[in-house]
Structures are given as C-alpha cells and as structure tokens.
Length: 250
Image (cartoon, rainbow, N blue to C red; front, top):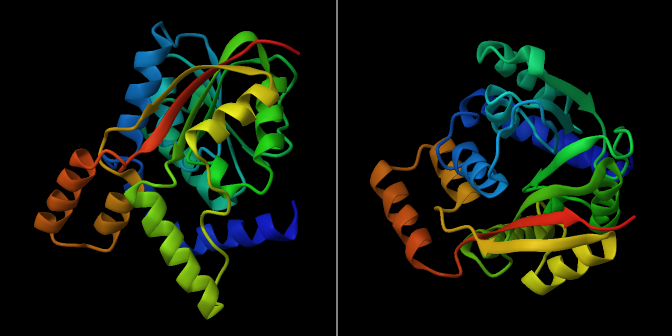
C-alpha cells in the first residue's frame, strides 16, 4: 500500500470510526444503492459471487448476502472490515460474507471468479482509476457485470466536497477526500479502455448520499435535512452517476 493510500486509510478510520455502525442502516446510503443494483441485475442473487470493493462496513454487501449471494468485502480500513464482520453476524449472514484487507489497485481475487464487481463511491478516491477498472475486469468472467456509483463532478455533492477539499488543502490540514473527478464521457472512456461495454449510465435521482449522511452525523436540524433532500431531488445536476457495464473482451 503506497503512502498516499495509507494516509487515506488513517483519515477515514479516525473520521468515521464512531459512525460506522450507524451509517450501515442510513436510508440515504445503502438502501438506495442496493435498490439500483437489484433492479438492474434483474435476477436472483442466490449463489452469485459478489466482490464489493471499498465495501466498508458492509452496508450493500450484507443486503446482497441476505438474498443468498456470497460476498467478499474488500477495503483498506481494518476498522471498517472488523465492523463489517460484526454487522454480518448481527444480520445473520456471516456465513455468506468474507472480508479482505487490500487495495483496490491490486485485488487479491482469482481471475474470472466473480459474477459482479461493486465499486460504489470508490473511483473518486483512488489514484489510478484505470488500474482499478482493469483489475475489476480481470476478476470477472466474460459477460458478467460491474456496478458503480460515481459522484457527478457538477452535482451538489461534487461541488461541495471539491470546495471543502480546496479550502482544507489550502489550510494544510489534511489530504483531499475526492482526488479524481469524472464527467460522464470520461467514465465511458475509462470503461471501454478497460474492456467493458457500458450498458447503462444514469443520474442517481435519490437525495445526495454523502451530504445528507454528513448532515445526520453532525446532527443538523431535521427540517434543514428535509429541505436539502428536496433540493437534491429537484436540481437535475444534484446526483451521482449509476453505471452498469459488462465485461466484453480479454
């Protein structure tokens, strides 16, 4: 793991350790992500092998495991993975969930061994997204799918986080949260280069996950959270991209 990734790992462990058990049930995070995954995949999860890269405390992976999938959660945070194991036990799916401490750039997964690779809110945090996508391609068998959610650079989350990161960097306080930025066309180009066919790329119309989760964490008034939620729904640019791609070649 390189020094920059190690810094990110430490940052997230310090910032979110007290919130991780709470966030797993957050309505603005895992439920909407899983709904998109379930609706697009269109068939049973039973017996499928899913690798959730950057899966954190297991919010999405545990929901897939409840539907019968075998889920491997990969993350660079040991704290997150320990909580993922705890959460899997509490939901009664620990037999279907395994965890691996690893970097998304070098996935410790066998070639052509996965049915679905999940990369939700991950690509914007990695230094070499093309390598991450190439690794995802390697682990999938031909015809199997990659599911991603990537913040829209021009959405409210993208602009808010980018502005906050700029101010923080200027103050010399920490490394940025989002280190890569993507347009819709850029994402399609990266996927094509990695050997994927982009089947679907749509705006995430649900209220902005990251912003609303942080507002809940820091105990903003419920009225303000609701008003922000409505703004997110009404402003077309306020979303992430939900992407489904299929492995088409070696």
